[in-house]
Image (cartoon, rainbow, N blue to C red):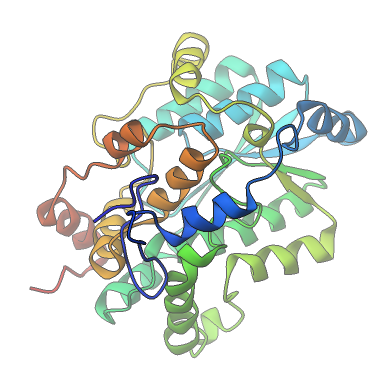
Length: 325
């Protein structure tokens, strides 16, 4: 059963519904609802960008996955705010062709430099998660590694600001804060301690996104921010702009609908749904619903799962494993 307000299911001990069908997360939000006019203003972002514009070869590093939110972030930096960004893409070997085409089109049309890094470093980690039966979400582990890599890259190129495509449903530390993430975060830490840090290759792997960001940002003073925090969230308007200006195209196969995530996202979603009953996408969209920037009906449409074990196993085959029978 889902919360009548958002799209989170009852999943004890982290999420439970009251007699009215409202989850504890929504109940807490109602009690702590901020006053009108307390949100972030675009003028704050502009002030931050102006402070660093023109000081280095690159004003900012834009995390580019080829999805609409990250691509729009690159578009904003170049066109709206007149920055000189470096587009950065990390490919762990499972990026889809549509995403890569979106990035190529964007950097060519905008005339920005693009740093593309492909590495098989995560392959063994993905396999370990599946073969050990760990409930740790694949996407969480990958995001932790990616954020540390992003900070290291920004520091190497002396770039003061990291621009992400995070929506208002995602936090400054990635996506893993809040009661909704408690069990997922615990599973992630358990996997890292039991199955990664015992291996010399991963002995310093961060236990969480917060740890990765804190350690990296503390050494460098680099700031990570998303332009989407300062604007009204409208995914369809974003797609309209991107399709017209940057020849952006949604992939034929994706989850959530109209997103552009890597192929490893399918095993991650499938396993996370089985282990917890919801994913980080459900959490993100539930936050957007509470903020009034996405309807519950639209979220349910975007989150509908229309793939199964065959697709998941076709992806896992590339890392030498499969779903347990």
